[in-house]
Length: 213
Ligand code: SF4
Ligand code: SF4
Image 1: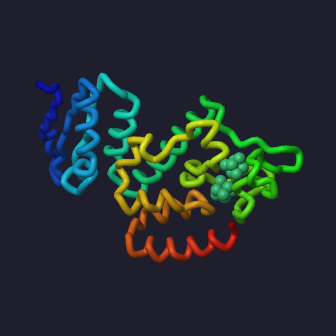
Image 2: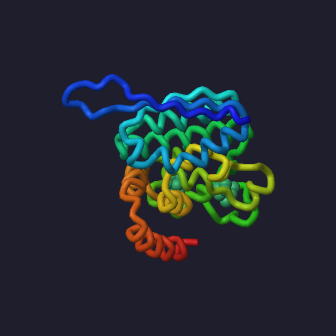
């Protein structure tokens, strides 16, 4: 019998204030955690707009805490900013722990034998590049590593970061292909999140990237 529990109860009803609900989530094992993940599209929807989530989990407690923190941010833009920054932090921590870093020689040429003409590695075609590295933050760039690096290490993919399931399908498409932009422009694109706009944007981006590689 699964230990999965969802308990909803109305919180104090204040005059002139929208009725708030509370949802307490108890997760006892991996199976229940996977069930929790499957319910995320429902939890991020309008029906839970005024719901305050609390959770206790015996598995992946940090992941559950991150997801619940995001669910409790009701402002759409602020939730996107939190998801973006937290995902970047998770990737940075993983890369640091696993020693996944691109090395450059004195001339700024990276170690990938196929890209010995590239100064500043993958950033060389980006208008943002600077001598001190990336001046902004870009989630798509953080996911990208060449075959040479992937052969030596195991960088994280989108599927490894459960938090990203709080993005819609079109927002996840944006994350797959949104290199060469600042954090602010990136957040704006995720915020717009329109599939139509993203398709037009992708076509333009495809031709721009095709021309530089
Ligand atoms: S990912 Fe590969 S090609 Fe890109 S900078 Fe690193 S080593 Fe060079
Ligand atoms: S946005 Fe991406 S490609 Fe541009 S400087 Fe930053 S990490 Fe490099």
